[in-house]
Amino acid sequence: MTAERLVVIGGDAAGMSAASQARRLKGPDELSIVAFERGNFTSYSACGIPYWVGGDVAERDHLIARTPEEHRARDIDLRMRTEVTEIDVAGQRVRALDLGSGESYWTGFDKLVIATGARPVRPALPGMDAPGVHGVQTLDDGQALLESLDRAPGSRRAVVVGAGYIGVEMAEAMLKHGFEVTVLNRGEQPMATLDPDMGRLVHDAMDGLGITTVNRAEVTAIRTGSDGRVRAVATGDASYPADVVVLGIGVEPETTLARAVGLPLGPHGGLLTDLSMRVVGHDNIWAGGDCVEVLDLVAGRTRHIALGTHANKHGQIIGSDVGGGYGTFPGVVGTAVSKVCDLEIARTGLREKDARAVGLRYVTATIESTGRAGYYPGAQSMTVKMLAEYRTGRLLGVQIVGRDGAAKRVDIAAVALTAGMTVEQMTALDLGYAPPFSPVWDPVLVAARKAVTAVRRAGTA
Image (cartoon, rainbow, N blue to C red; front, side, top):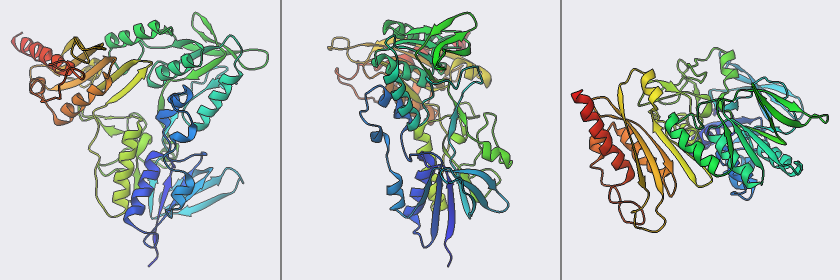
């Protein structure tokens, strides 16, 4: 028998997880695997780049889970520095361009995995491509930024454009390199994944760390000097000196190839798949990772979330399906955590505006507590905000800002959201307790109790 051929476009989390899992289930005599990666690295943690740049991770290679040589040793024909430029769906083939030699050629497939990831948002503004302006999407980006930091003049001023996860993490990294840091944020408060009242807590903490955050700042241009390097970032009414600019504006699905051949895309531009991660309407094409949209289990709509956790799960499911096994990806609740210095930031589920957008009525409860028993040394405060559905009391979302282990408490809420629990049911959760780890009433349960009261009051209004 002639082995089937699996072609994988993209050599990072989703793509190589899919290839590796398929190989575990089928040997090379049953399934040949060809993977194309246009970059220089495979299977690495893009989420770890800010911590490598900031010095928490000592070496770039510590972020690499598996090298090209390790993949090839498992009978995966991995072709680096090779970009897929075209998909022929009807002919079941892809055109690839060897970026080193310039050679272009076609490769046929029986099964195809699209794992093209996401691309950073890079506004078409004057000076955006000037030396000293950096994105942080790939390991090459991180290396280029580190080299730029070493070349920065004595004034050492950094401007970070964007105040989402990457923006605040890179602000911390610049601070650790001894830069004077300004964050330009077009929103009302930093961390737009939080409600503005919780974002305000992040803003205050960043100010306390010496990071200047400018909200409602729309960048209009990058200004350069006579040498062509960045010198300042201009907004509508001000100019901020900069020796280095870091872009943390966010990402969008990289679906150029898919769009060109009419594969189904969702409202956020990501590929649409079924529960087994097959592209809708195509039995022999799968997609996973940052290029797809996934179902939000709370809102009941698809959304785009670029996280390695989801990408690796997608890859495992795809590889199982391709290899003759079975798996499904039911959806997400939107859990994410981050930090800036010792401030921890977490969210899961819906914000207030998300709930309004899907027509849900809700109540809110916000509490302040500590991560340990108040009398235990080192206890520090945290703020927990909870959204519950009007009258039913179904949990809709949780946001946490604090220190001392605050962020991972959001996992309690993520499980409750996935299970469809009410805030009243949450108050009975049997959580671990000892003074070094929690007060008698964990902060999440304190918020749930207050949310129960808000739900009951709403029911009598």
